[in-house]
Length: 259
Image (cartoon, rainbow, N blue to C red; front, top):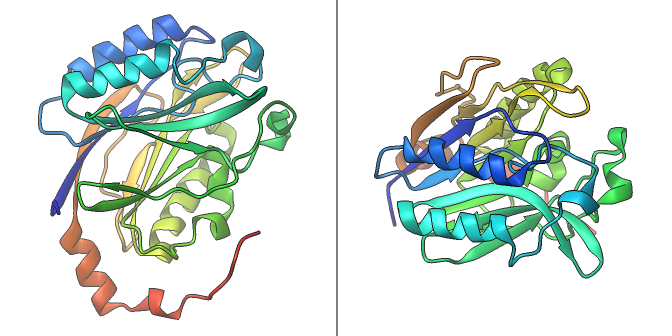
């Protein structure tokens, strides 16, 4: 088990529906990250932006972007996380991929489709919550709109890290800030949120506010709004253990099943 986990968060603008150029841009950003990082986190739909034109940009699990993630993870000896549009069994998925340096790929399909822009009419929702075991850390990966649904994120698995990737628009970014902090406090875990910046192809504006919160809800990152940046943060297992032992709030959680 690794007592510390070093994570690089990439807050970036995205080129609208251009996987090739986005892969080039992220390669350059990843190349600036120092060695010794365990996980690199990219935004939601990092190779296209949050598009409803799924048929135009969708790839398969054997496609160029998944291959790029596998190659990048091996090259850097670092796990890489991000979501892309995947076509599979005649369905489209907003699929998060956790790609380990070994080439192992773990997937999570976004559970809550963003009905406000018709995501539910294009993308098939995921059915399974996923817990990733990596270097002795239990990580729960989720995507953007999932943040508004605390039951889906409830820490019934004693995970250590809750990880959200997003294209969360600027007009509602105060909700993003508040909910990330709340998820950390109520689940007694580190909560990570990686959001994009810039303006997309349908004129939605994004201001970033990427952040990491600790078990107590304290922010431990320093991202500037509206700016591209890469920040590396070190998570400590001891921080989780000390406060879960001292503040036994998770012992009082409700028992329930999601159907």
